[in-house]
Image 1 (cartoon, one colour):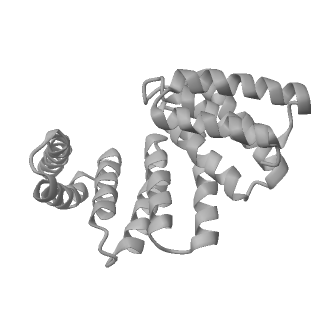
Image 2: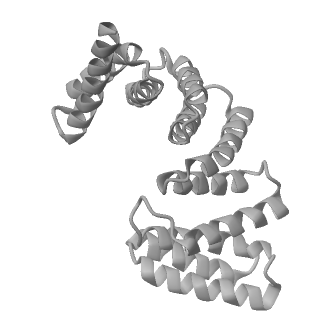
Length: 235
């Protein structure tokens, strides 16, 4: 940012967010956005960072599975400006798209999230190639496809990411992909195929973290797969 006063204000907002003073950050950023609009118009590139941080401030004051209108509006506006000034494939635009995709998906709008996350995957593949970063992006996309009921696409995406992570030694990522794949197979009615996938995920998790509440959630999914497999065997 070339304007020292603007950079200072954004820095103060970041510090407020870091300290957890979200309401104060929201108020500061709302005023900053208004000042920029009054001085430079509503399409100024200087609006991008304050809008993005404003959305973050609002998000932190709301339940994780909701998407307040002002948060979504700020993210969508920041994205439009980033695309206009930096290009759709710019790092800043892609970062905003990923945040918007996660917010949409968490609030029950997985179908709307998918196109944004697909662009994140394309960018990550172009810039970084195969590897952990791309596997993380693919996992996020697969979860959104699963939430949107696009099970075949979700399964193919989980399997692509799993193949990419094979032999890399990142067991936590592999577990996450196994859990997603298992749930996807259940959604597709392929319970017998889901059983060994979820057994592997459950065994690893309990061995690593013990029998906690997350383990009980995993066990419930595994029992669901086993029950479906038994019913399929009887018919």
